[in-house]
Every structure is written in structure tokens, then in C-alpha cells.
Image 1: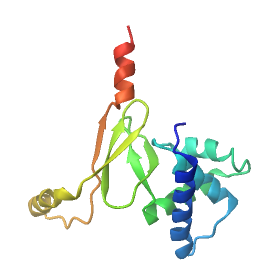
Image 2: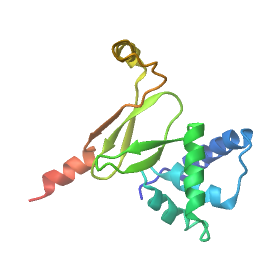
Image 3: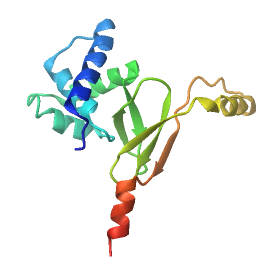
Image 4: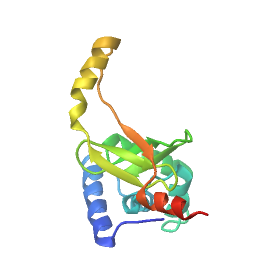
Amino acid sequence: MTSKAVPEVQERLEQWWARLQAQGYRRTLPREAVTRVLAASDRVLEVMEVFQQARAYYPRLGLVTVYRTLDKLTEVGLVQRVHRPDGCGAYVAVPEGHVHLALCSVCGRVYFFKGDDISALMAEVARQSGFRLESHWLQFFGLCPECQQNLQEVP
């Protein structure tokens, strides 16, 4: 697992828990284990990866708790459910503000970029389709620099 520096993770966790507790979400050891794994990762994680890694912090963690915590973190906007090229879903911690992502198809590393400038496209799609569009999530797939390098090194 690739992860962020410890002070950055601690700061993110405190911000997350402040938001969660402000909405009445109780801070428990199982939930802390799940949030710690997500806050530390710089790549997308499948539910079972979150479950297995979080059990290092709380061995009695149940899979249902992982799903419920992921749902709440997604609802609050702290993590985003990501669609991988293989069709499976995964989760990633998102930075503040409106962002989109580029996802490495090999290792799952994520690059976030600002994307506030597609309102004209949304308006056109709404006009053509008759939909009242409420939100969007833009995601690109490709290879990160490290995976590109690894592919070039293969004989």
C-alpha cells in the first residue's frame, strides 16, 4: 500500500472526524480503522482491501461496518466511489473542493485535477436530453508515470 506521510494522515483524520461528528456520527474503533486506511492511501481501494487493511488496526472489524462506513464517508463527501476499467467499484479519499480524477489502470494510483469548467457542457447535455442535471463526476483512465516506466523496462 502506498500511503501519505503520517502528519498529513493525522490532519486529514481530524478534519474528517470533525465533519462526521458534527453530523452526529459516533467515533468508534472500527470506524476509526476504516477511516485511517482510506486517509492514508494515495490509490483506490476495493472494499475487501479496506477491510483487510483496517483489520490490522481493529482485528474484530466486521465487513458490514466497512460498507456502512464507506456509505457514510461517501455521503459526506470525504471519499468517492470510483469505477475501475474492469467494471469493479473502489473508493478513494478526495480533496476539498470540486475535483475530477485520472486513475492508473495498472496500480490504481489517482491524480486529482480541478474541473469546474464543464458547466457549458452540462447545460448542453441538459438541453439535448431534457434531464435536469444535478451533478457530475469525470474520470479518466490511463497509466501513471511509474507504470509507464515499468512497461518500457519489460523486455
